[in-house]
Image (cartoon, rainbow, N blue to C red):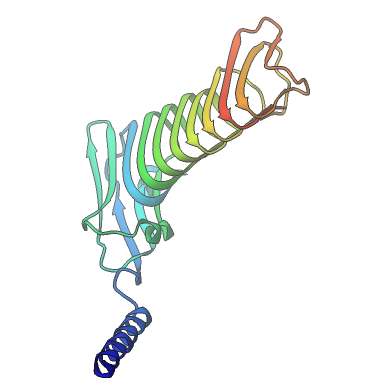
Length: 265
C-alpha cells in the first residue's frame, strides 16, 4: 500500500513539474512578430472600394494624389500565423482582402495590426466593408454610399460626406461624427453615438442592448422623431417624450433599443 501511495505521489509531482515547465515556455501561438508589408495601387481610376478582412484595424486615409496611393499592413502580428494580403484592381473597383492562411489563429493578437489604405482624395461611388473581429475608421472622405458589416469591434466615421451610411455591428459600437447623409445604424450589443452639426437627412438607429445618443449643434426645424425602448429612459431635446414633431416633420428619425436609453440633444 505504501509503495502505491509513493508511486502516485511521484507521478503527481512529475506531472506538476512538467506543467510548470510548459507554462514558463512561450509557445509559438503567444509570440508576436513585427510586420511591415506594403502593396502599391497602380490603378488611378477606380471609383469603388471593396474591403474584406478577418482581424485587424482598418484605416481609410485620404492622400492628395494618386501617386501616393498604397495599402500598408503594419504592427505586431501572431508569430507562425501568416496573413494573406491581397490587393486587386478590377474595372472601377479596388479589392482588398486580409485573411489568415492558418486554421488556428488567436484573433486578439492581430488587433495590434493596422491595415492602412491610402486613397486619393476624391468622391467615390461606393465603399463596402466586411470584417470579423475588427475596427474600421473612415475619415475625411466623400462617397455616395458606405456599407459596413462587422461581427465584433467598432465602426467609427469622422467628417464623411455621403448620401447614405449603412453600418451594422453584431457586438460593438457605432460612432459617427460630423457627417452629411442618411444613416441606417444597427448593433445587437453596443451603443450608437451620432454627432452632427445639422440634421439634413433621415436617421434610423436600432439596438438590442445598448444606448442611442444623438447630439446636434443646431436644433432641427423640420423633423419627426419616433423613439422606443422597453427598458430605459427617452429624452428628446429636453422633453421626456417618445414622439416629437418639429416643424413639418419631413425628416424622419426612427430610434429603437430593447434595453437602453435614447437621448437626443
